[in-house]
Image 1: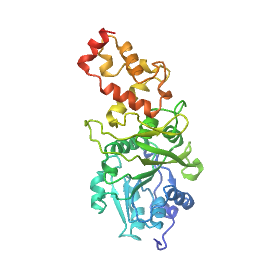
Image 2 (image 1 turned 30 degrees about the horizontal axis):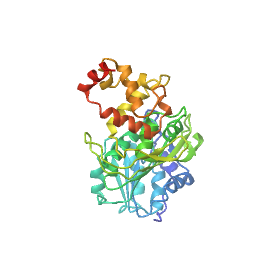
Image 3 (image 1 turned 90 degrees about the vertical axis):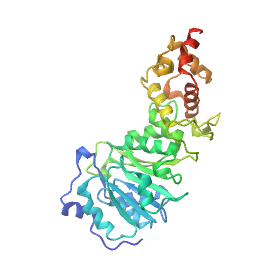
Image 4 (image 1 turned 180 degrees about the horizontal axis):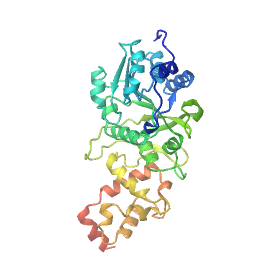
Length: 340
């Protein structure tokens, strides 16, 4: 939509005496060429329902509105930003809605329903220049929603383009056998297709942070919904392998978020240790009479060497290991290990 003339964002920041707060990890994007590129990174948002996470002073908000979304829902925690966002909302009252709240605590299903977007196959896009200090917990929250087809993803596979500190972005997209590979790499790549968008040098932010940013595009993989504590549903999974290709989980079972997260927390606990020395801390193995031997045997049942390190495994292999561990019966663990 063509917005009426609005004061420049920099002018509004001065007029309302608003400065970025260090304790909120705020760094604003004021260049419209960059915010327009942000919108293009998801192929545009025309006629889509857009959730903007952290509207800030409204720079990205304006670029989103220019592309004519069906609805724009802007989540902003900082009360100081509301007058600046209200200025933009006044120019598009039928399209834009401001939600004063924390993106980590928002009820996304209720939000979409209140916007009239609670319909199957609703085309939802999530965009955000995230404060670096909340980016990691927020992406884990979204991944959990993704795995269960709840929240933002209840009505369809919402595409996200989010700006992270570049170090975090590199971990999100890191393939196996790289130093950047970690828990967040596997979680993201197991539930979604993750690709780099574009790098944002530190000088494009106001104020200038010490590190660069990077936009990452995250597209959920089609799957059946799964609720916390449910048995895994049957559905082919795809993830990034060593060579960058997509592979599917051999047995086709979807690993629940909590199961995969628990395994990865143990597996990446100490990067210098080989895999069996890390996963031995998992409850079913730790309670065995011979936990190290049990850990080795579990890994070998998946066709893997127990001497691999966590960063060597593909998503596919982590999924197989998670399912193998889930199939262990706690009461059978000790008797099985004593027979080893």
